[in-house]
Image: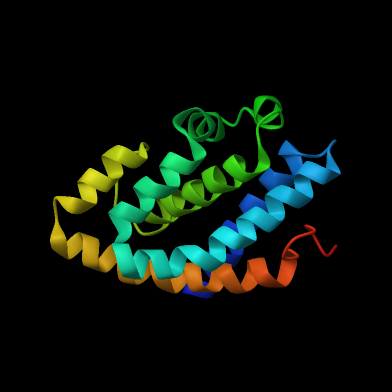
Length: 157
């Protein structure tokens, strides 16, 4: 298995490239999305520890809305560029969590946040392992996001 740092770098790079594609023609929205993603990376760790992984997943899903998450899963870049950057940032963070849990850790088989939350809740051992493994990776994502994205004005590049 790859190290949490290597997984975090690879997954963050995917998200960063996606943000660039979504908001390539609108730098103001790009900056807002980057800083909002940075905020998600900072706040979600404690939320997972305090509320649990399934509750945190559902909270993020409620903030991004089903439509945005569907557009992200379908890679509909043009339509996403018209959406509010804060909601897209929530969606991107949820996509990051789903991709790590599903593709990297093999802990869930579902695409939909509601269904993969149910899947985790059905098996306490899997939930515990998924939470511990995911947190290690998300800690590294947080470090990268803090290094790459400015707090309020967007990207440092």
